Amino acid sequence: MKKLATAVALTLALALGALLAQPRTAMAHNDDADLAVEAQEDSGPLALDLRISARYTNDDELVEAIDLSVTGTGPGGETLVATPLAAVPDTVGLYGAELTFPVGGAWSLQVTSTDPAGELAIQEDVPTEAATTTTTVEAGPEATTADPPIGGEDGDVVEDDADLLPIVGGALAVLVVGGVVVVLVLRRRKAAGIDDAL
Image (cartoon, rainbow, N blue to C red; front, top):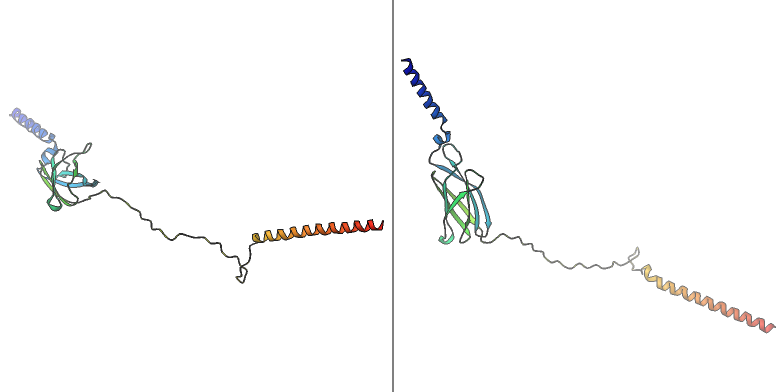
């Protein structure tokens, strides 16, 4: 009897140990996923770099493998063909794709997944052209620089000293030449008087 009880207890212990040894995530995961936008950037005209994260709804753990795709409806009834989102390298639970649109404008995107299942609606304004920055410089009136009048205290305009230099120099030259001439004339007269006296 004791041997039977021991065998039963051992069997139960082994079963319980095997049950506890099973990965917790395998028991916790369900069949539904929460999808969220992680990155949504314009990568050029009519292009969008889209990144989506996926988590299980019941335990919020990242989904390591999932089938994701995105479709869209745009202006004038234009459509975006179903585009798969692939796992982003060196990440877990992150998936992405670069989308190319036929026309720009307001687009309604629908992201869907299977195994686990999920849905996500996105509104995106797709640019038609690359953003450019233009700087406009308005031409103003040309600046002119005029020499200010030189005036005295009463505002009368007087001549600049630089303009007076030639006049003063000329006058001094005339005085010097005149003086030399006078001296020469006086010397000649004095010499003539001496000759007459002899």
